[in-house]
Image (tube, rainbow, N blue to C red; front, top):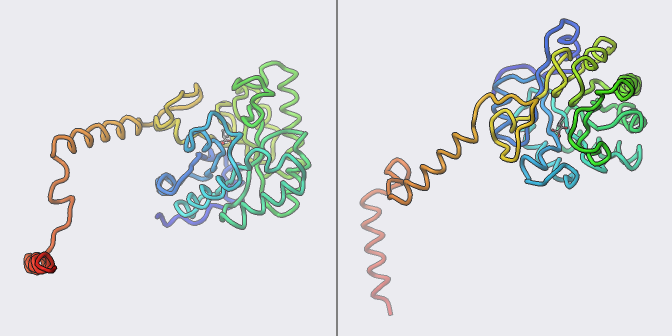
Length: 289
Ligand code: KIV
């Protein structure tokens, strides 16, 4: 662990005010979180993208609150000092304001996270407001919102035409007024992101939406070659951990097959006198009728 002090909302607001970019990454389990903690990333999102990266689903819709609880608890144990965000899964907030507050409360009480995130613009503003009014910091998510991917016509850039862009700009304003502590924009054009950032009084985070935001988010598995199905254009690969692991696995299979593994360093012995006693006991046992 590091001796970094806990990241707070005022810390994030100060970074924004001082023009220091905020760092954010997704994370899904304890060992990843332990690394993220050492790198001193500001904000960590336990995204429902874990449905794809960790559970192998085609999308995020099958992810449940129980899935999210288990992974968020593990991440909190690995990164005690980051600002931790639990991602509200499909249908954990859409049905009603009350459902939204109950499930956001579950995240806070059962996982130790600092805040939650939900997807959607004006149509979800009352859910976001209800959560914020319950005293729970809540992040909005606009642009490409994977839980609505069917309605959006696929994983594509949002707001390329001026009318859709204007709607996103308005939605940002509505979520800010509803009490969002921050808003994440996924796959909108950089110029639209710039307009929103200039108007916002809360931290604006970009995922594939350009450099003008107050902070950047990347998906852990995309950064390290760990998601086998595709690499989105917006992701940058910082290291190919997938290749390192695969090479290690191939070597392991070859060494076990070739009887080069294990070596004495990899097993545990016992004292000769104890072994002699054990053998004596076995002989006596063998003589018993
Ligand atoms: O689930 C997730 O990781 C997300 C990001 C794509 C923003 O919501």
